[in-house]
Each structure stands twice: as C-alpha cells, then as structure tokens.
Image (tube, rainbow, N blue to C red; front, side, top):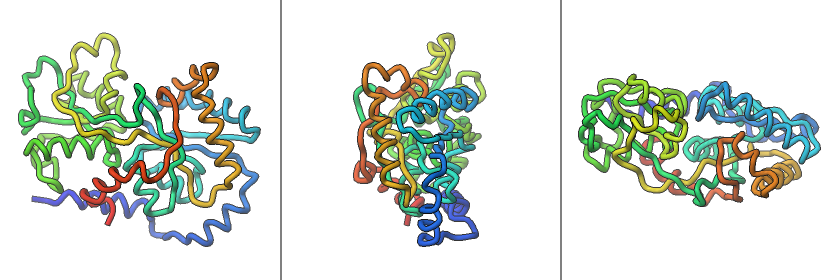
Length: 297
C-alpha cells in the first residue's frame, strides 16, 4: 500500500521551490514596494469565472475605503495562493485554514480576519451523495468514486478523510485510491458538488455549505451522510513584511462590510455573514491535523 504522505511532500516542495526562501532579502525587497498596488489573491472555491467578476466589486470598494490602488486575481488552486504570498505576487490572500497553516509555517504569513457563517466562526465538512444512490453510511463508499475540492483544502479533503478514518473506511495516511474506484480533485466546492449532481461521481467530500452552490433543480437530489467536527472558518491572511498601516487599513475596510449599509457587498466575496478579527491561535486545531497528515513536520 502506498503511503499518501508522499502527496503532501510533493505539494510542499512545489511551494518552497528550488530557489529557496531568503527571509531577510524578501523583507528588504518588500519595503521598497510600499507604494505599489495592494494585491489580493482569491482561491477558486466556487465558479472561477463568476468569482473574477465578483472580486472587481470588492476591489472597487476597498480602493474607495483605503484610498490606495488595489488589484486582485483568482489563483489556479490553493497551493498557488500560498506560492503567491511566498514570491510576492500577492500581499493578502483569502484562503482556508489548511493552506494558511502551511503558509504560516513556511513563510510567516499571519491571519488577520476570519469569516462568519450562520453566526459561527466554524463550519464542518460533509460527505454528500445522491439521494437515490442507496449509499446510506460512510462504509458504503468503498469501491465508489468521490470528488474532493483540492488536495490543500481542509473541508474539501483532509476533514472528509478524517470522517472516513473515524468510520474505519481508511487508516490515516492511506491513499484514498486504495479504497475508492476514482478520486477526483475538482478545483473547488462548487465544481466538486456539481460533479456529484451531474452523476460524474458517487460522492463529494466538501464544505457543509457546498450544497448552496447547487441549482434549485439539483438541490433535492443531494443529501449528506456524515459530517466532521467543527473547522475554523476560511480566513484572510497577510504576507510577512507587509506595511502595518496597509494591513490595518485593509482590516478596517473589511470589518466595515459588517455594517448594514455594506452587507450587500459580502455576496461578492464568498458570501459570509461577515468578518471578525482572528489570530493564529484560532487555527491550532487545523495545525494539529496538518501535522497528523504530514503537511507539517
């Protein structure tokens, strides 16, 4: 049996890159760029084409509130968001807890804000299936096909795996391909659950809120059979060395989205209820599971 930790080592190697990471040189280089536009990276947890249009509205809002030029783009995947912070292509990134703890460990990125959904700063991963599939429990998934969001996603991969470990379907560190007929990384929550709704896979391991990304016609066809323990919500983090004034101005602008007159803008940035201040200690539980699965030493 192949040990699935190999995947984590490959991902980490891609992020660190052959060039290595010179912290002192990086900090000095960034100090010289304080007058450049603030660049934001967004992970593609929903339809990337829709997200590209949405972030333009948020960028316009941030430029008005902060009084500085702001740019943004959607990354190819979660690992690319970490790499963007590492190489200076992004100053701030919207991402999940798993890529964040990796970015914190490797390049000193720091979380500043956390999303709130349905009144909570935590959420859960769920295993979704088609309602008429006959799949009623986790053990029924053996030999079936499954879609995940991304190999660097907590609710879109690692926590669904942990559900399977707790059910006895997998042992921690096993390659899921030894249990499932096909393992598909769809690129985001919406892509994964759409693959399920369209009959391309038998199950999807994604965020509990992924079913909100289905059409009204698809929603009644989907149900869930298991969910994870609570996971700290998606977050906003900044690269090491970013000017404190810019960080503070950005944070205050984002927190203003909680105000009644601005709440309509939240739908353009992953649709949370709002944002709250956060620190690294809020993501210690994700750090623990990242170590258990070999992402961190």
